[in-house]
Image (cartoon, rainbow, N blue to C red; front, side):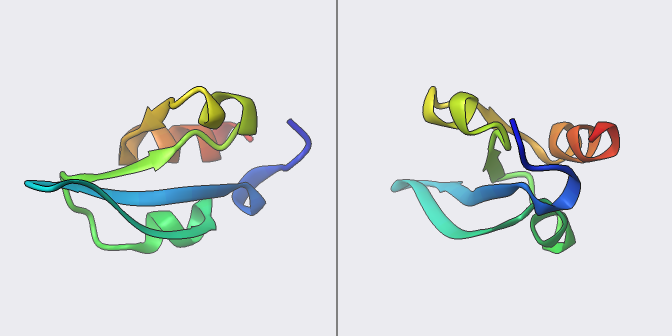
Length: 68
């Protein structure tokens, strides 16, 4: 993965009664600045893992950001 830190791009979505609804595409810091809601999930910042469908919760995304 070439992107570093908060410049990695993720897709933010909300899980609801009708399934997953995409909220937007943003960098990790912008995603973490959104209100904390239990139904929000994020694609993995690594494009290969995101393409495989791996999703993260807020704590996992914050941990990823702190390590990169």
